[in-house]
Image (cartoon, rainbow over all chains, first blue to last red):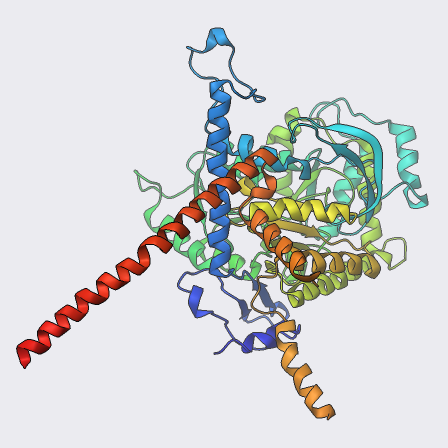
Amino acid sequence: MANPGGGAVCNGNLHNHKKQSNGSQSGNCRKNGIIKEDQQNGKPHCYKQIVESFEEPPLHVMVFTYLGYGIGTLFGHFRDFLRKCGIEKCNTAIEREKQRDFVPLYQDFENFYTRNLYMRIRDNWNRPICSAPGPQFDIMERVSDDYNWTFRFTGRTIKDVINMGSYNFLGLAARYDESMRTIKEVLEVYGTGVSSTRQEMGTLDKHKELEDLVAKFLNVEAAMVFGMGFATNSMNIPALVGKGCLILSDELNHASLVLGARLSGATIRVFKHNNSQNLEMLLKDAVIYGQPRTHRAWKKILILVEGIYSMEGSILHLPQIVALKNKYKAYLYIDEAHSIGAVGPTGRGVVDFFGMDPREIDVLMGTFTKSFGAAGGYIAGRKDLVDYLRANSHSAAYATSMSPPISEKIITSIKFLMGDDGSTQGLQRIQQLAKNTRYFRKKLSEMGFIVYGNEKSPVVPVLLYMPGKVAAFARSLLQKKIGVVVVGFPATPLAEARARFCISAAHTRKNLNTVLEALDEIGDLLQLKYSRHRKSMRREPYEETSFELDD
Amino acid sequence: MDFRGVKGYFSWIYYQYQIISCCAVLEPWEQSMFNTILLTIFAMVVYTAYVFIPIHIRLAWEFFSKICGLHSTIYN
């Protein structure tokens, strides 16, 4: 089908059943345009259209990206040579003169990329802020005199920068106001620190209240909370699986899941991102062939996935994965760090998004950092699972438990979302987030940017590709008083650098329009509008005919 | 984007070249060095093309016409 079919997609009306495959770049199983799948699994309330796109860029973009990296690498080698000769001062860590003949302590080549490419554009990361991360925040101004090796603060702050980078989906991370009065009271009674672990003397009644509330919110039997979200994953997966078990993990899983899986000692097999056919193939092999040499059955098979993947913006294909897990008798662990509170009609995460029963998922994990304005993580599921974790988790045994004011903040946020105080403000925020997401994503694709992910996910990655453009993009947006997070090589594939926008319910339409105008301008200046589905490309014929009709 | 005439257009093209080839993130002396090398290579290519391409075309034309000419004299 010729390309004008793409126009039907970009005016926001995605009810056409067309699989777009641009012939020049197809031939791999990566989705190459707008794909729509119908989820028919017999239950009418589970019917859900998943619309996600991972468009491939034109060929010249990839050529230029690799060219740019090639030139950067050449200059990197040249500068390394100068440093080694002593012509230039070396600012990174090197061994002392006396220890030059010892076994090398610092791996020169591994840090090549950091030293030569990342350092040049380092001013776009680690920017210190000095206010609450609400929809607008203040950034401390800093300059570098020696090309980003050292920074100094000028003393000024850049005020009212629009915040498109913080994970503040519902706008609950804000300065103190009257609704946080209970947190002040808890601070007065309990103080700040707990000074103990859960298993010793660190279990407060606030934790019990919070855990009951989390279980009620998620509609499961029980939950347990931990002080740190990363530690929730990395310390609890080893408690659930061990040697002789199999972990099937998505290829784009977060570092905490990967660390937990590796620490557990189980065998890890990776399946292609969000691809249930690949997962089914791996499950079949696992069930048929068993463990590698002995061919005994696996003790447990655990599937590790995330609700929303933060670098891609894609939402998990939950119904298919649950169907697979039931068929092959595996266990499912979902990390809802980015999806709890952010998707679903009532904000209860990806399970709510698909209208499924939370009892079908064995381990529900999530964090309170993103949507609840606090810190920490939880694991929820059946009561015997949670009781087992209370006794056997490393985090419960060794890590300090959650601080009381933070627990109270989460309690307040959850009650706000559930509407316990009688108001519907929580539900309004969730709907506002959905509206903002829809508007922002629609406008971005109309403008012609390549945007990854599901159309309903509040994490919006816009692809930039070239390293020079990444730096120019972040710096120009900061000059226009918009703060964004750009992500480059180690966190994303080499050639796919991107800018990641996080929409918040606290963003007003005016904020979003300011950002969109700035993006339009910078997109034209830096030539970032690579998408083939631009609405403006269709508009011109109409304008011409309207001129003729005017005669 | 409206270009302020030819100069604006050229400065935009130069800017695009700089960000695509990572020159924008290099230090100024590295940029000058890279531009110098690139211009030198480009000048050498242009010079070689100017000196050698007409001669090669003329020789190739003679070679092929000789073959076709020989071909036609045999047939005659």
